[in-house]
Length: 304
Ligand SMILES: Cc1cc2nc3c(=O)[nH]c(=O)nc-3n(C[C@H](O)[C@H](O)[C@H](O)COP(=O)(O)OP(=O)(O)OC[C@H]3O[C@@H](n4cnc5c(N)ncnc54)[C@H](O)[C@@H]3O)c2cc1C
Image 1 (cartoon, helix red, strand yellow):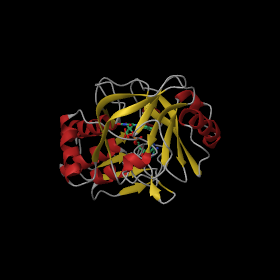
Image 2 (cartoon, helix red, strand yellow):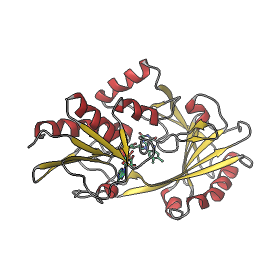
Image 3 (cartoon, helix red, strand yellow):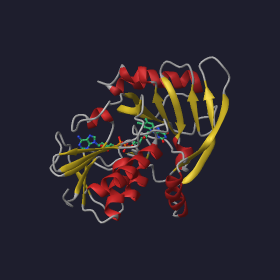
Image 4 (cartoon, helix red, strand yellow):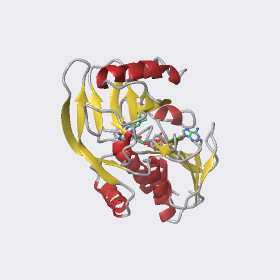
């Protein structure tokens, strides 16, 4: 195998972690992403003058390697523990709460963490429709990766439409921080973005159910009316001051691979696959994307 560089396609958490490990090992890396900014599903666009987390809403830490990264972010003020307790709402019953692992949030939006992992590595903006020459890492959901490379037993993804709802003042909410919504046809999760970003802004981010999202993938704005109506009934909120819908066609893997990455030899080059779906622990999320990227770099290095 030649020791030429590697093109990493996809600058979400998995691609960023893989690229950073390769650079640390002295490999020349080119990172390409079709988005205007890196981050992928850790997206924090500016809406009405502040950043809003429209993709992943928080992250958890079970992996000891990822723990060290999070400790460093915490020491540098990039992230902070948000809460271990979310509300639980349903259309018919009274609100309750559910405790779990610590959920971490950022004041700068989750995308800022992907930027931090990338460090000085530049990201070229380009949407690729074929594999570039040389060694390649394809770090993205299987349905997107399969357009570029052969993916063994590709897993399907479920869609979510995230609806950001801004109010003129902070609404009185029947939950603190965020809430899972059970047995609702349209809404699966609600986050108080002012709480998680630490600025108390009157902004909620609503994740639709996959079924509701599937009905609106061609026209995501059409989901806003049923979602605002659902908020009225669930929370007693009034008319919002503004709204914004973001479609995630491939939001969450419906299944997982039983290894953390994949490497294939294609003639005189290697093609690696990474992403949150490469998750033998069975719970794809930000930390599994990080782990997949790091493991892929370790698997590639001896082969370059
Ligand atoms: C609505 C939502 C809520 C979530 N909530 C949570 C949560 O609370 N906690 C949690 O831990 N995780 C959550 N997640 C999951 C988390 O966001 C992902 O696990 C993680 O960000 C995946 O990173 P990744 O690198 O695998 O993929 P991605 O972030 O999807 O990165 C793939 C990148 O590839 C790029 N790309 C794709 N095709 C091409 C192409 N042809 N050419 C160039 N670039 C391309 C994309 O632009 C993208 O930047 C959530 C995700 C969504 C969508």
